[in-house]
Image 1 (tube, rainbow, N blue to C red):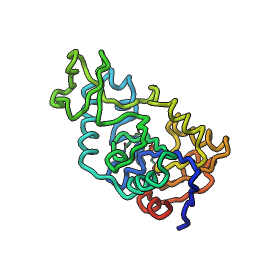
Image 2: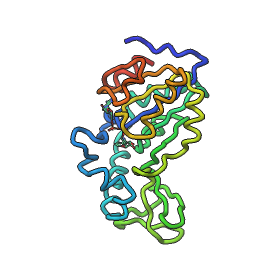
Image 3: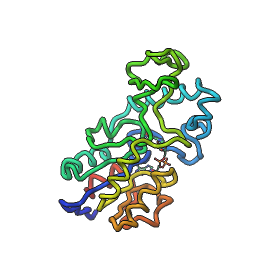
Image 4: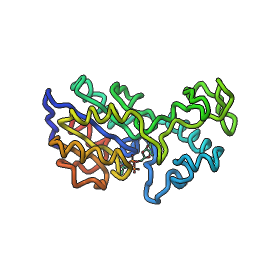
Length: 233
Ligand code: NAD
């Protein structure tokens, strides 16, 4: 397979999605049925869903948290760690994933724009806590500071993704942009590729199926990220 041949002066921004973690054993979002692990998006990934049934939503994210802890990074995650070592500061990895696998693989410059399964925060005083420090036995875990309800530190549909200013600063510098394992239909992340390409950046895609934003991809590698990334990077 042809190598990407990145130049030392390139500034690379990568966007990853659920597909890069599929080979670690974590299901993607809408797999084939429009559901996330048998639940509708409205039920488990919206503020309204949490308001309607916090016990169900907490049960869902506790399961996701324990599942993520039980799996390991795969060769796709590891190829991105090696790439970051080569590019040093000219590298930013933005992930929509909440599983923490980039971090556990050893990636340093990572923005988890949709939050993380490894943290939660108080619905009242906003104190952030590590899930590993929280008593997860109650149906709805409680804040250690004010005793009110905690919620998962996940950016739900209708909420503002994290660190957008930093992301757009990097997109403004990017000479190369890669999208990996993402269907291209969750916004605003799905727009990043059009934004950088309109600035003249080179765009690369690695995905099992053609994503929604295929029209903006200059070089497309179809297949599994764990097979393709180690061979093109
Ligand atoms: P998505 O499920 O909508 O799309 C996944 C894409 O990955 C699909 O286009 C699929 O063809 C592709 N894919 C599947 N296996 C692959 C592989 N082995 N290699 C390369 N590509 C592969 O995911 P999304 O676009 O990331 O949007 C889902 C949203 O749900 C995100 O915002 C994320 O926060 C959340 N989510 C996260 C996780 C996780 O953290 N692992 C898992 C499920 C959902």
